[in-house]
Each structure stands twice: as structure tokens, then as C-alpha cells.
Image (cartoon, rainbow, N blue to C red; front, side):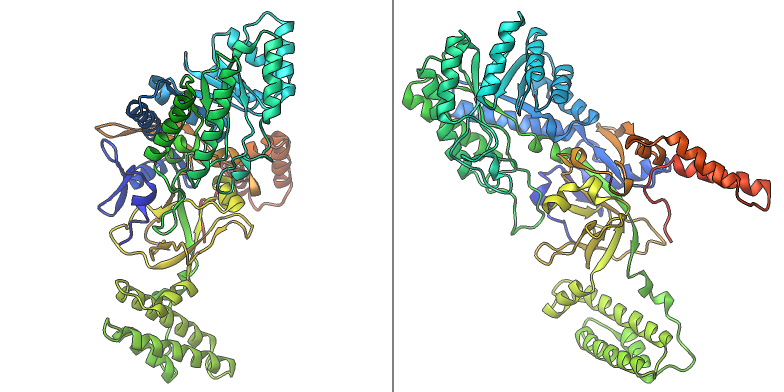
Length: 609
């Protein structure tokens, strides 16, 4: 058996029981049960399942660990968090975030005008809104409108020009001035592939000299009391906690110095995001070297230590960790359409009345293979295969003989793998890699897992069923796009083994986990494959409810979304068909009906050969 690293990445959100992966919550439904129920409605393509309770669990975890650290360290500031909309702006994800986070006062962070409008429309009453990123006058004015509307909003300036625009807007209108934050450009850089978010060459933030200029400007305009926050962000998915500690010391001292310079309403430090999610499913390769307990304890302790040493009021702590909140709540489910070794099934053997002697020997090896002799017989089979290929090249055996030999040798290898699965030899492990199986999945990696092909970001993947048997096929996954990058290749350093199943007799489903952050917002319509069908699953003690269905776009709607006139296209298709030759009117009508049905379906595959 194989637990697919569940204890590493799942955070006990899922468990394996009776060969199935189940939600570890209340009635504990299996993902297979939910999938099969949805597929009863003629859903054939991939599907994205959302589980709101997992968002609430992450929000509760974040707040509880910071509250514990605050009590333990006698810290005098409060803990606050906002969700960065860039991580996932889709309606049912945001609905889950805001509803599940309401009791905690969990707010939203915006980085564009559209996101700010969304934040103003969806932030729970009393919760915080923070605004980051580059801003023009219109966006800053929107911030003033939000403050006038009663929102607890902080506009973080990324440069002195933005502060000058805030002052300009304040002088032009009588709207309430929002809270002002300063993003500081720290010397400390982050870790991992997003480390460039911090450091002196970072894209965002004010230098020490610019911060002093900002304080002077605010003082001159009698707006220093509007400065309430300093902000920093050293990178997403921080793999190492040491850079964060350095950044906290630097930012903490900047905060203390600004308080001493007269910024008496400055009361918050926003440490940005970066709290990492565990994506890996192999024990020797993990995504982070710290726990949420260490993360929260380090932040609270270091800031408290600095403020105590400088006799400065403890700041309120803000975080913008979005990946940590939503990554785990979404699971991509996709059926396997085809195994490319399907032609090696024993039922395809077709022996002649008289076969070459060496082929008969292979038949005997296949029939007599056992745990005791499998390695010896495997060596014999591989040797026979080389001889048979030579005979074929010389013209002494025909194509049917060669086909029979390939099937027999393939099956001997498979049987040896099964027999020695508990203690495989190096030779068998090498054969597994060499003879890896290619699983064709009904999905687009470009659409549903863009960080895989774009950043080589691994996602946990495992079957939904057969989990009480040992998977032995070294697996690479092919998607249905016509692009060689649409593949998750077998990696011997991070191997994925799947089951040898007969797709003629049963479906085989794979789940891709921790896909709730960024994947939907970054997904592209490569080959015009659009988003999968989407469902929210609410689980209670008695069972579960499937709500908020969002259907994958139809082919015509996909074309319309990129600028085509779908009516014009459909009329052209129908007219061309009507003008063609048909034997009967019924045949014409039937073909037209098929055409209209096909263009109203999504582009994912429904049948395979």
C-alpha cells in the first residue's frame, strides 16, 4: 500500500479508509462518492471541488496560534489578518473566505482597482481592508470613498509619488482620509523562488531616506496622525524562517524609530504574506523548515523584544497570508482516459498453431513465474526478447510473433514487480522507470495547474480509490492538450506510482490537492480548454450537500469570451452542413442536432477510442 505522503501535506484534512480517501470531517464522505454523484449528471470532464470547512480551519489555526503566542509573551498588541484577493478572486472562493472568516474579523487585501471594488463590496463590517501595489489617482480616490463609506481601510504607499497623490486628493475633496501605510524596502531578502519580493533591489517599498521624506511631507500637511501602519513582504511561500526573523528585526526597529519621530498614531506592522503550504508528498523533500507554531511565536517574540528594549508601544500585527488560507480547500478531480500500455493486455495474445521455440519458452516463463524464480525468469525473458528482436530484424519471425513476445515480456515484468513489491531489487526499480506508464488525464495542465508548467511547482496527486493495494506503475501524466509541456513526467527523485487498472471495466480517478491558491486565477485557455466544472461541498454530521455549481463554458461561449461572434459561427457551421449532400432529410436533421449539441458542451473529452 501507499499513503501518497498524506501525513506530510494533508494536515489531517484527509484520511484513507477502506481503500478510499475521505474527508476527515463530520460524516467523512469519500472523494470517490462525491465524484460519482456529480458524474451522474453527465459530467465527464475534470471537476474542482471546494470544501469551505477547510478554509475556516486554516483561519482558525492562524488566529489561534497568534493568540496563543500573544498570551505566552504578554504581548500588548492585537493580531489581525486579511486575505489577498490576488490569490483567488473567484466568487465561491471569496464567499467561503468571507463567510468562514466573519467571526474572526478577517478582512481583504486589494492590489488593483477591480480588487478594491471587490473588497469594498465583500469585506465584512468592521473587518480591515488593506490596499497594496501601484496606484493612480483614481485608485487612491476609491480608497477615500471606501473610508467615507465606513470601511476600515489602509492605503499602503509604494513610493513618494503615491503619498503626494493622497495629499492632493485630501486637499481636493472633503472625504474622510483613509489610514495610511508605508511599505518599507528592507535590506533583508526572502527565500525560495519568490525571494525577490524583498531586498534592496525589490520592486516595492521606500528606502530609509524616502521614509524620512514621507514623515516630513505628512507633518507639513498635518496628516501624520493618519499614518497607522508600516508594511513589508519578503516573498510568497517562504521555505526558510531565518530571513523572516531578520526582516522582523529590521522592520521592528523602523517602526520604533518612527514612533519616536512623532508618528504617535502608528500602531501596526503588516508582515505581508509568505506563510508556506506543504506541497511535497515525499519525506526527504519538504516545502518549509518551520511550523505555524514557530512562525507565530517568532513574530510575536521578536517584535515584543524590540519594543520592550526601546520602550515603545507594541504594534498590532497584520498578516496577508493567502496561500495558507485557501490552498487546501480545493481539489481537482480528473478521470484517467487511457493507459498507453493498454495494448499489452494478455487478452490480445494471438498464438499460432505452431510458434517459434523461443516464443514457446516465453509462454512457459509467463505461466510458471513465482516469487522464488521471478528474478531468474525475468532475466531469461529479457534475454529472449533481445533474441526475438534480432530474429525479427533478420526476417525469421513475423509481426504477430513479435507482438506476442512484447506482451509476454511486459506481463512477466509486471508480475515480477508485484511479487517483489515488498523488497524490490535495484534492477526492478530501474525497469519501473524505464517502462513507466503514461496516464492520459481528461484535463489541461495549463488551465488547472499553471504553476506546475510555469514554475515547476509540485502538487500532491493520488488516486481516489484502490488505496488498499500497492501501486506499482511508475507514472507520468499526460493532459489532453496538443502541447508537450502538458505533461507531469515521472521523476525518480519524487516518484509517483499508480495502479494498473483496466479502464474498459472501471473508471480510475486522480485527485490533485492544495490547488486552491493562484491556480484558478492564473489558468489559461490553452487549446481553448476552459475552467473545469466547479462545486462547493458542505459536509455535516449526516452527509453532505453539493451547491454553487459553476459549469465549464461551452465551446461557443469560450469562443465568444475571446471576441468571436458565436451566432455568426454557428450559422456558418449550420449553413455549410445544410448545403452539403445527405442521403435523407432525417440524416441531415440528425447531423444538425449533433452539431448543436456538441457546440453547447465544454471542450473536454467525453469518449475515447
